[in-house]
Length: 265
Image (cartoon, helix red, strand yellow):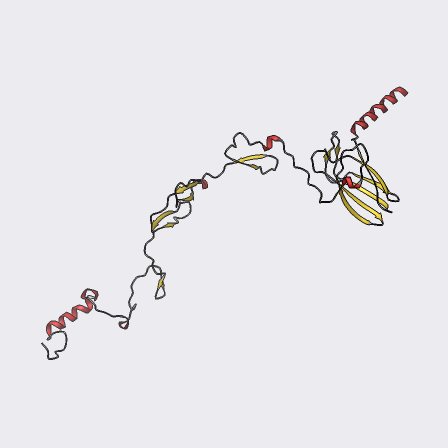
C-alpha cells in the first residue's frame, strides 16, 4: 500500500513538474523601500517550453529594506511575440505606480535594468494560419476580404472598368452591373429616362423660358400679352388678323386712298 501511494505521488510530482515552465528570477533593490510588487501577465502567451500562461495571472512579492526577488516565466521567446507584464509597485517611500516588464530567458538572476521597459507596452503579434493569408485558388484576380463572421476570408470580385475611350461614362445596367456608354454627340445632354431605364444622350435644344406673364409650362400666346406702346417697327399684312385687314381694305377701295390727301401727287 505504501509503495502504491509513493508511486502515485511520484506520478503527480512528475506531472506538476512537466506543467511548470522554466523561470527567470528578477532580483534587485529599491532604495530604502518597503511594501509589495504585484506582477500581472498582460497577455495570454505560451512559454518557450510550451506552458500556457493566462492573461491576468499574477505574482506578489514583499519588498523588505529595498530587496525583492520574484521568479517569472519569460516573455522573450514565448508565443506570440510582443507580450509583457505589468508590475504594480506599492511601496514606501514611492507610493503606487506601475511599470512594464519584459522578462528574458536566463538561468541566472536578472535586474530591473534587464526587464523594465522605458517605452509603452508592446503589442503582441497577430497570428494567422498560413491557409488564411495565402490567396484562394479562385481569387487570383479578386480581392481577399475578411468574411462577415470575422473568422475567415472570402473573395470579392473587383470592379472591371468597362470604359475604353476618353469621354466614356459608366452606367448601371441589370442588377447594377456596370456598362460603358460612349461619349455623346457635341451639344447632346445626358438625359434621365425614368426608374429602371438607363439614361441616354439626347439633343440639347435651345434654352427656353420657365415662365411668361406669370404663366408656367409651355408658353402659348394669349390676348393682351402686349400693348401697342410695346410695338415698334413695321407690320406686314400677313401679321395682322383678317378681322382688322378686311374692313381696312374695303375702306381703302371706296375712298380716295387709305390716307388723307395732302395735296401731293
